[in-house]
Image (tube, rainbow over the protein chains, first blue to last red):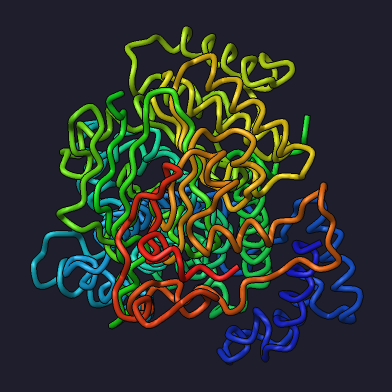
Length: 311
Length: 329
């Protein structure tokens, strides 16, 4: 349902936007009018809108996203080539978001009111309110350009990559991954830390934590086994919410760091009015969000026995 | 007989903003081996805070237990014990059952694992034998099909069953003292009687001492050997159950007994105690009960009465013990 809505909305937006894939070509007077007409007919762009829409939906349903005008190959092929890069970046950012966010938030809760807690709260608030692309540019300037610790963009160093050992290749990949992943994960980590801190403070005041202490458990067991496990529940719901943010963020981050993923592909496709690629990216993003939410729900069921059905 | 637990001058206060609430203010009592001491009082009288203070389960801050307070168990002051040694007492020597079983159990862990956890915290015991003992404990507190129930989560059980689980957990290491803080308040009336009976039975079998905290005089009359009545953060009267019920020395005890519904002497309307419990931030001067007391005279407003021994083996914080002629009929 959501996927269908996204497919339709993308189609409408592209129809409403001025120009078509051949606009650029028609601006070059050298291209004969006849050729342009021929091309329009080939791609079916001369048909009425509703016919285009029906054909488009039928194709999408069959998994055929159409032909990319810019890349001169099926849109699906262009995306398939880019998607591993985006997934890698998103996965790394997700790990940073939750690992760092949960750790910092939980630590803050145990040292509530301390100088470290105040400082971390201020930092996370600042990060939380920062636009992703700006953060990306700043990190790039500082660590990529001024300090030169990290490469300024790309997935690997194309010039040396083929000659590296397997371990060297992995290192080269990771080296390129760090800055964009940190950029994409930082905002989420800040938000998670704030949630985690609040959830933790809420849980430590509850009766069952007192019961755990009254049983004579170590503080470590009280903290991890009893408090943290329950405080994770509200954060798992965040997991589903972060998926769309992660994808929209990856469009910006991929552009800033010249990361060849589907985000950057989408930006290039929009500039070139490459209908097939734009719609395909939108639909795949929609599918990823739906899958992300499903994953969050499953995770929640796993973590909270109360949401499981009674046997 | 040497007391198992000796509490002297216990004072617990809470700081809220600029005011200090003296929730427990100079509470002293003894608990003898094997006896049941009932602590009775209204909401806000300080009975729960007293119970929590014994094992230092008060959140500090905002809570604070006065340095000179003494909670002596086996000759050791628990209030001065390092955290590591206090942990060996909690749940093993002295354990607690709380008022709300639903919120006192961890919702994301099975009841079996929560009981086994107590065993493993205090005994060198394998996972497997802890699980086996857990099933035995569940059977002992009257839970049917314990082999299945041990794998259930708290939300899959009724309130009464959850409280049985709490009791099984508290008894896992066969403690010398069980502190039961309003163990039946959150339960249905029919279940209340079952839980109380279970507690009394287990206490007899294990020979432990019990501190039973309740606002219900009927509960105390049924199972306590001795009773302490709390008002305004203090024990205002203490003595053997029978003596205290037949000859209440403190006007507050007297008024409480009169306000309790009775089957043998039905009255059209139950008498009430005029006024309300004052807030713990502003206790009245002198005797804390004097604004609500029908016997009060000048001395009561000026001098706080210490615990005074009565001819019938009670101790009461009331000047009437000193000047019995002032007692109105």
